[in-house]
Length: 158
Image (cartoon, rainbow, N blue to C red; front, side, top):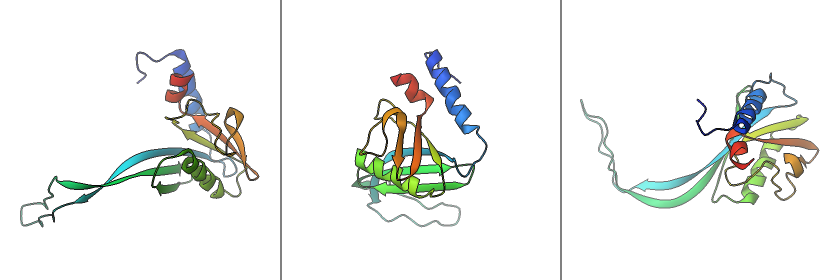
């Protein structure tokens, strides 16, 4: 369902993303979905109570906070592939290294199309330490990478 406040730009951007996702599988030009999420690390402070006949295992709600991490995930559904990486923080450098990791995992690809949200970055033409350049295209070694922001971000940031 399209939100009532969605504009024509939103609809056009969503159609572009759907066109990308509907491409047939091509090992030389994979379509890879990339996302990231911060996660809180916690530890239980009490031992769970073991399950008994007619009663499931029980866990206390109390926990100890052990910091945070960032989880990067890339998936190529048509090939059944995924790549994940956990970092201590979320920086532009961490993001750029993960993009390089994705590129390195496709050594025979001519071009990789990355589809992502880009919540902290206003447009897909993000420049990050030489990994990506104008118009969201950049050379990673001899590999071409094209970035596509998802429709929500395109609509929000023009």
